[in-house]
Length: 265
Image (cartoon, rainbow, N blue to C red; front, side):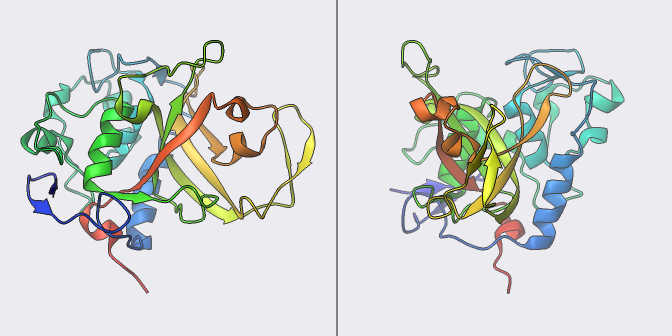
């Protein structure tokens, strides 16, 4: 079975799953990518709109959600390069990768390529699960069953969510039940203690999670919509709904947009 890149070219499936074999990210280009991601922080003009954003249906210039934010970053558009800043609407079909960055992805090319099973996409990548499937077949899947040891800044994290009352997946028909996406901003040694969501200081189990990964994403309705939190938060926090498998990390992918994932010494 072949996997296809965004131009429809087939390449061999790498060891350990779909995608290219693991490479180190070029640190300079990751810095560029994360600078784009951070440019959206503390922007009170952004309004959370689930599904109805500048990348989809809305002709307004303030709507954002997690997938719109992630795609804009992957395409190389910082806050001041978008309608959020210019207040000039742009048809989503006109969005292309920013040629100022060699790593910028052009999601419009997705419609001209295929899935690994040979089927054709029916629409431009838009929601988190579509981004997840796109990346799973055209990027690198990072192992997550070892305490997130291999997760690096610049990686893309996908979550799945269950209803806290019924236990049913919120998005049962979406790829891997994915309903949320964010970007890894920072990786550092885990602390000895942490403060949980209830304000209690607890010990951090470093044998389980040796590192602390800071995530940047859009997940709250009150401006500013973009937030900073940490990947292990739900895993370590006994008061968090992750404990009951309401939210789970479904997948982590490392963008493989050419030079960004080239090995460095």
